[in-house]
Image 1 (cartoon, rainbow, N blue to C red):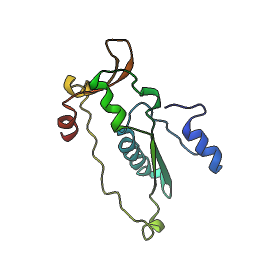
Image 2: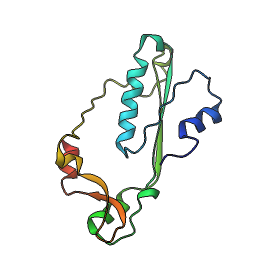
Image 3: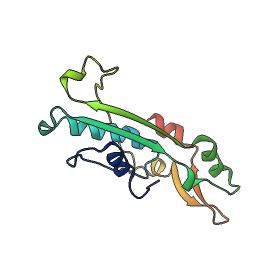
Image 4: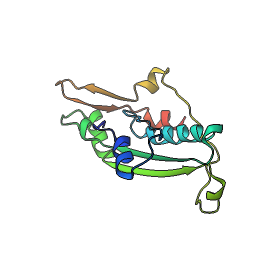
Length: 147
């Protein structure tokens, strides 16, 4: 889901954010984009030039582009698991916000197992035997996600 203008441009316009506002659009990553975005925001807020800053992370998932209309059972599963949704979190490195915060982000851990063929192919967009495009979830996905 990559609208034009981008989701970040829509938010900047709607909330009339300052012109020095940094925006990043991370697309095509499915549900992993939320965690990756929080890690990116944490890293940005740690910079010395970012003291007293806020980071808004908005994560969305929209299956519309990948709704599978075929009959391959391995590709139909994603139609039942994924839908449309969104979540947002406001992160701050301002000391004055510590008393109002409901949670404290202690650390993030990111690993990338894309070099492993089993992991790489656990969620993959492809065409079925009839040429219908969809997303295939492998049986190894639970093992991969757990690792």
